[in-house]
Each structure stands twice: as structure tokens, then as C-alpha cells.
Image (cartoon, rainbow, N blue to C red; front, top):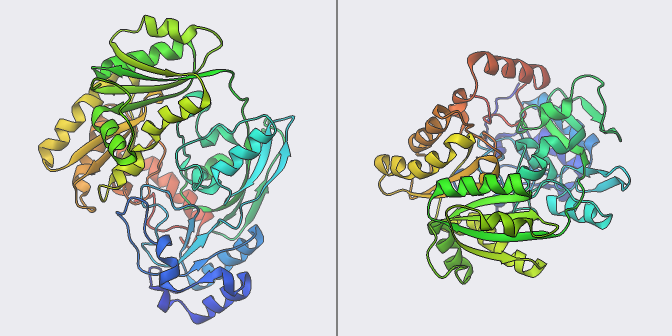
Length: 458
């Protein structure tokens, strides 16, 4: 069997010819100028050598693709919108990128049950639009909604800004269609949610980062749309007050989103987007809260909130979108500063405030030239620790942050996955027995290790 990790020029000509016959010449790209966007990850930390890009149009074509890859020992790297933040869809071991975006259909909509089937290449925004067209919502959302795909969200079990209300991708999965690394095409897309018929392959594949097989479609549950909503920017002088305020809002209303920002991050976004600062005075910490409010519940909670030093409240849709720009502009604004280390972590509520307050000093002690940017989904304990001013390969600083998280009882990955960026730190989250079971599962479902090698497992 041919070795993995070879440059595309070393891939057997017969393999490329068979791919061309399978998908057609227009759907096999070998020109490096046409494939450059497929081999650089969104953060800029991971860049691969040129590889071919194949664009299959059906689950059947993907099953044949896997058979060819097993025959010749060629790595397959599934890719959707390429918005991942941990190098999990970058072909560092060579092989072939499998662009899933031709599988973008949204079908089998059931407006009574609140369900639909989405191809792996459908964007989150497209799923949201179809759901809204029949009076429902899709419960997963984040700023990259118009680029990120359903398949990518399943690969990483993406959470996003609505997790506090609806949970992450795994909670939305009813069933799945996929091709395992063994070449077997499985399709279980039930039209009912209560389905206790054996192993839940959808849950197994969700969060597997393409290491077991290639997801081709998913059956998704929808959620009811909210009633009248309020969006508020709330200023605080201490992060402990932010966490306490978020808890009060969760107890006193139905939160749809609870998002943390810092003064430094807010000022960066204002400069990058040309926005006016939302407050007259500098607020060290800002909580963006989107809440379902059928009366004056939110105003009553705000009136009793300790540590609140400023507020801006929006009731109409246009004003709410303006407030959301301050939060959703963070990732883009930080990326303009150069290569970014993206460490999305989760902390238990009782230690969350201390971690946010203390981690900048810990980073500065080890890397004085680094800048720490903190923001994220404070309502569910998920904080994005973004680091700039570092060498892309500086894993020591990643280890510092992730070790601090694990020591406080948190998770080293909340929604971006492990990818390559965190692979050597997976033992902080799982013991030897856990990892051994994962290895055996992979060996059973991807016996030739052609599915996204170099990702997730050490």
C-alpha cells in the first residue's frame, strides 16, 4: 500500500485518472493556484503543500472515492467552508482534500415535526433560512454561519452563540448519513426523534473530526422561534460581576445568548469596523445578552443587578443587529493582527471569573510580547482565549493555558475540536483507557487510517 503523506505529484496517476472519471474533470482540481484556499487554515497557523481537491456530488461518489483511496493508501481530508480554527481540515499529511460543498441540498422538510435533512455542504445560514421559511429556527448559530457547513459543525460538535438556549450540534442531530473509512455507506435519517434502535452512530460521528469517516448528510431537529426579544450591552468593572449578572439573567428570563467582551476587544472591534463605542466611559467587561422578554422582566432584573455600571438596550431588530456587531466582529478583527492561537475552553461556573481575571498575567509571565484576547459564551462557561504576537508553532503557551484549564476542572475544547493545534494535549482531557478505546474504534471504522490522519488522536 502506498505511504501516506506524499505530495500530490507522487499520487499514482491511475488514482487521479480514476478520480477524474468518477467526478468529472471540472470537479478535480490540481492547479496549486486554484487550490491554495483549501490548504491554509482560517487562523493562518497551518499551511500545507499543494494537494488535489476533489468535489464529489453524492454519497455514492464518496463511497467510491473511499474505495479508491484505500486501494492506493491516499489520505482523505474532508473540508466544508474551511472556517475551522484548530487545523483540523488542513491537509498537512498530503493526500486529497474532499470538498463537500456540492452536497449542499436541504430537503425533506417537515414543518409539523420541525425537522429537515441537510447535506454536509449546506451552510448553517442556508439551514436557518429554510427553517425560518416555515416558522421554525435552527438552534445552532455563530458568526461564520454563511460559510461554515453542516458537515463541519458535526465534525467538531460546534456550539456557538445559542448553546445556552438550545445546546450544541449533537443535541440537534436526529440521524446521519456517512461513509466510514472502511468504505461502508450508512444511512439512518429517521423522521422521529424518539428512536432507541441501537448504537447512535450520529452521536459517535459528531465530534470525530473526520477521523472515522465522511459525513454526507444529517437529519436535524428544529426549535421554536423566540417571542419578543431584547438585546442589551451591559458594562461591569469586574468579571465576577459579569458572571453573577449572567446567572441572574438565566434565572430571571429565557436567555438566547450571553456573550462576554473585554474593553480591549471592544476597542479593537470599533477600530476595525469603524464603529462608535457603545458607552461614554470605558467598561472593563461587557456582557451582551439576548433575552426572550414578554414584559418588563429584563428591566426588573437589570434594576437589581449588582456591579452594573452602564447599559445599552435595543428592542427593534435593526438596533439589535447593531449591538451584535460588537461581539461578532471579534474573530475578524483579531485575525487582522496576524497568526492567532485559538484556544476555546470551558470552565465550571465557580472558577470561571478567576480564570478570566488571572490568565492574562500567566501568559505575560511566559511570553511578555503576547497579547491575550478574551471573549465568548460566558453563559455556558465557554471562553475563547485568543493569543497574538506568538510564533505559529509556539505550543508551550498553548500548553500553559490548557493545563490551567484542566487543573480547574474545565475542558480544553468547547466547540472548535482538537484538530492539530491541541492534539498533543488530549491527555489533559482523557486518560489512557479512554484514548485506547478511541483508537480501537478508529481501527474498526477506518482500518487503513485514510480519514483525516494527523487530527484529533495523538
